[in-house]
Amino acid sequence: MEKLTRKYGLMTAICMVVGTVIGSGIFFKGQTMLERTGGNLPVGILAWAVTGIIMVACALQFSVMATKYQKVNGVVDYAEATCGKRYAYYLAWFLVNVYYPAMTSVLSWVSARYFGVIFGWDITGGEVMTLAGVFLIAVYTMNALAPKLAGKFQTSATFIKLVPIVLMAVVGTIVGFARGTLTYNFTHIASGSDSVSVGSGLFAGVVAAVFAYEGWICATSINAELKDPKKNLPLALIIGSIVVIIAYVLYNIGLAGGAKSDVLMTDDGVYVAFKNVFGAVGGTLLNICVVVSCLGTLNGLMMAETRGMYALAVRNEGPKPKLFSQVDEVTNMTTNSSVWGLLITVLWLLYFYGANLTSGWFGLFNFDSSELPIITIYAMYIPMFIVWMKKEKELSVFKRFVLPILAIIACAIMVFAAVYAHGILPFKNSETFSFPVLFYLIIFAVIMGIGVIFDVLKTKREKAPNKNND
Image (tube, rainbow, N blue to C red; front, side, top):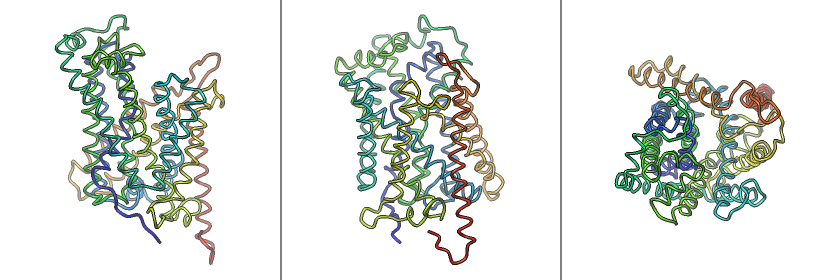
């Protein structure tokens, strides 16, 4: 049977980390951050840094795991090596049917949204939704038929999206100091903002930033196609995470040099800052870079999603293992797995549109599918870290206990932040009450229940004599 070849280098892996984390959030979370911190810029910058440290804590732990375990799909391999095959199966099932496709579908719409802004389209209108479908299929096609091209696109998009970030970080900071704007923002609280204590503002800021740091785990999905994965994957996780933190912090400092905090707290504050620093073309340049940035994130997520069913099938798990474990002999791509990934992603795009861009097609089951899967994915990491501490007795105290404990704390913060931001208790939305976290967990349970059915069927196949395990 054809197997995946090791066609990606360290740079592609780093760009998967950077490219899937840095999407549209870095450009438009500045307003939310200032609102949550009560207009206190230093606290907002600190919140960006603290949230980045949380991400690095998890990335460091996975980087150590990557030096010991490798098979076909990093995080699933780590789950199997620590918690066993059954746990790895359910983690992989969740990744391929909830986590990756939910985020991928939203990024297709976000990419189309910021493209539509350039032409003045309604962001919930037919033009944008059609373009979202085109972007989704185009990126899928590139990954399914030309995986090497997809890797090169990921690298190119990552460097392109860093252009406005680096320019604003450098030029905005220089201009801000020259005009006194940066000094003013660091020494004055934005006028008209609510009084918020440093402690509560910092926590609220972390909650606001947490979702802008999500997506780095996608890099582990190309483990089987990465050259020297035990060396390159850990390096990619660490270097990529550090690049993201530096980019977020320096960009937001530079942004503060372009406009005062009370301006940055408005809906068009980022555009005003770019215009003040780079002139009238700044706003258009920003929109173009945001589209490229989002497409890069979309591509990184699609690279992970198209390999999801393959990660299950090579373990003889899930539906039709022989079908989904096939690798195309010409493209060296998991073509059948890719088709499943596209189908599930389209269904999640339909859900996102109905739940978030309309009056709400699904009643109580309307929730933000781009953020709430964080609740379950980080919770599923925790047992892996606990077993790691029990199992890896030959490691140093730092690698065996300190890193996994820090990672567990980081995961707990991420889960709590998601619950805190969306609310597991009912809150009033127009004339109805909403339970977003609760009803997300119900959907999660249903999808995992379908996974249980396939698991039971697999067990029956294995027990049945002289049966085809197809």
